[in-house]
Image 1 (cartoon, rainbow, N blue to C red):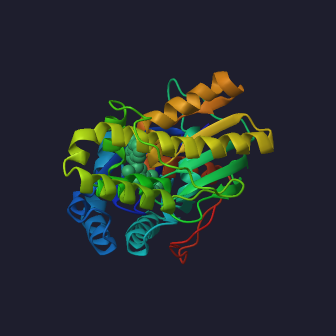
Image 2: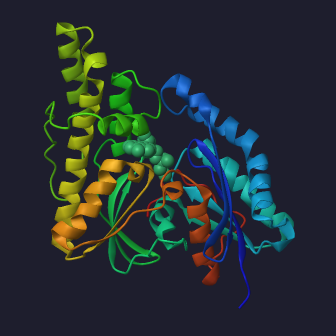
Image 3: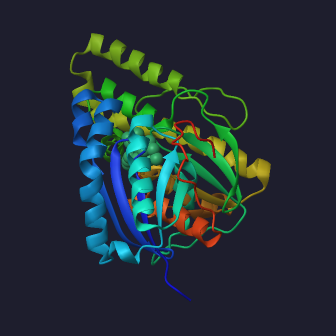
Length: 338
Ligand code: KG4
Ligand code: ZN
């Protein structure tokens, strides 16, 4: 059968990304991470939109070049419709529409959160694809959800955060500790060098499969303020242990809910996705679940954890097979649901 080439674009937050897929294989996946937000300790929406404007054409150009594919070979253009920052989404949406219109090929809209989950269906050496039904825990800077996935496009959110996302818990804890943005990767690195039981943070009490992280962030803040009052060098002297203790608590919160979800649904195929699934601790805890609970687990390849267009492209391909195309008047949606 014919090879299908898809160009995909991701611009929902602070990464401008373009990928080329041939069927379910990623030929190129270019990500321009916006450095500008580091100075502000968080994503500044206005600056993100501007950076997308600057990056989008060079990133698309590079993706085509790396894949050794020309525009004329493309069968469709896929793009992130939402959820995300409106100004950021508009850049990718408008670009994708124009390109599809100019090339006279189908336009395919993609839900960013579905993409974090369906990234597991990219064909990669050494990675197996999930069996339906499976549970997917999507953990990122914007979301924390447990999703029951019955088929590619049949997904049900069975638990989610009632306030902050888990990535925010990492990033805000990092800010309190004076670390750069985003702090998740550095906390993870230091956590591996520290004692996870050095300091104790209480886990929030939330009903059922929902999560809460805003109380945790406040607990970290009060704890640090109290300790620094006693010893101004407290952070510097204990940074690895603080990071290890924060990470230990966060992973405990995530795993408690995941275990409960597996028990309630009877589903033992468990996947993770989103930026925080790059975390070494959660990867290990999930893997341990294979022995402990008889789970089959799916951990994404590192490059498909944080925001990237490869994951948008695989959804584009799956929708292409069903001729599920978008109309040219489709509108970006910052609060799009799964
Ligand atoms: O999926 P993503 O790139 O963007 C959103 O859709 O939010 O996720 C970004 C989040 C940030 O909060 C970042 O701190 C976190 O993922 N992150 C990590 C790690 N790598 C990225 N958190 C913990 N450990 C990591 N290794
Ligand atoms: Zn994301």
